[in-house]
Amino acid sequence: MERGWRQEWWIQVDSKGDGFGIQTWPEAFRYPNPDLEKKVKQLELRRGGGEGDIAHGGGGNPSVRAVHHLPCLEPGSIQLNRAALCVQWSPKENKFAVGSGAKIVCICYYEQENNWWVSKLIRKKHNSSVTSVAWHPKNILLATTSTDGKCRVFSTFIKGVDSRESGSSSSSDLKFGEQIAQLDLSYTWSFGVRWSPSGNTLAYAGHNSMIYFIDDVGSSPSAQSVALRDLPLRDILFVSEKMVIGVGFDCNPIIFTADQTGLWSFLKFLDERKTAPSSSKYGSQFSEAFGKLYGQSKPGTNSDTVESSRARGGAHENCISCIVPLRKPGDPVVRRFSTSG
Amino acid sequence: MATEGFVEDGNLEAIISRIEQKSRKIESLLKQSKPVEALKTALEGSPLKTRDERCKSANWIVVHRAIMAIKDVDAMFSYLDPEYYDILMKYLYRGLATGDRPTCDQCLKIHEKLTEKAGLGCILRSLSDTVNTV
Image (tube, rainbow over all chains, first blue to last red; front, side):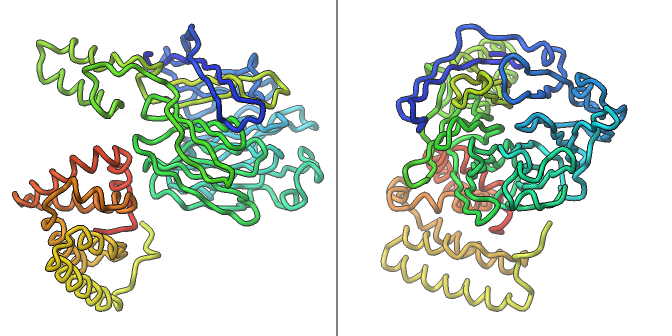
């Protein structure tokens, strides 16, 4: 699949959702992604993961164009001098967070008195670009990853928007922008932070081909790191408390599962592809790049070489940069998800 | 770059004496013809946490000795545990950086097998590791 297309998948999880006896198959049809075709970096404003109401916005531009989809946003309420890189609705859909290359996270919310959406900033906490943001299901805590390698958790309590009882007693006492935890596991860029459905486990990926799972971030964090055999991940999706799908530079979603004792490990690649005879033993973007270089050095056989190295039969042929669940509102189980790259 | 976690100059002597100790242990293991044990010993002391070039090259000489003593690469991997893979990869790149012919030959030979075994993820981790200065 070429860059700029979105792949839909079905996933069958048994009733307990523990990830065993799963079956997945790629959807027969694929969607062109008009925004990406225009070579605009994709930003998605996800309304609680509902299927029908994914709004697309543009990034790569100093102001967040996505917010123009919202009525009555205060003009210039998000003023960034770098691109917005990620955006996410809070679970209650009364706030959304925008992470940016300006080392700032904007928390936007609706102000009743003025009939405006306004933003509050978390600044001077990140030392580099914010690559992903994720909301805790209780609507107060926000986890971020950034290219300084850290994963951080903040309180986003806003008076008048969040009520005291909406969070657990400990999290609602915190002021807006207060840092609750800083996880320093990766020595390189970190990406794709996500909370598990219950909010007990946090997972994020490091660019050093590692994935980290952290339990009980607030009180007594305990971390696990799983080293990948192949290329690093870019985004993560929790299917259940015990099962995670990671996507990234291997162009092929990877399933991780936790056993009874909570120990996470690699299960398998999702996309069972036929191995083309000409594909190298690593079967990755890396070898494809080699194939291209090799093709360039021999002008006569150029197109043949590239074509044969690409014929790998997988859904994606480039880095997968995004994975989102597709589910009906109120359905707690993830049965379908979509990947794009 | 953060400097916390890296030892002060006063501890350099301690590091040097630790490297000497390691060197003696490796020599005795090599005499007993246990090259894999020697390599493990060499890789174990590697969280050096120093930027001092003198320490780093003293340590490299010891590790180099152990790497060059490996004759049968396949046999080595059947005894070497996966936790050593990332740091071994890092030393292999240091070896390749020397440009010395026999060292590069040996490092490339091990590199091929190690990549087959530990995958590209191992290379990425060895490149992005900023704690173990080799």
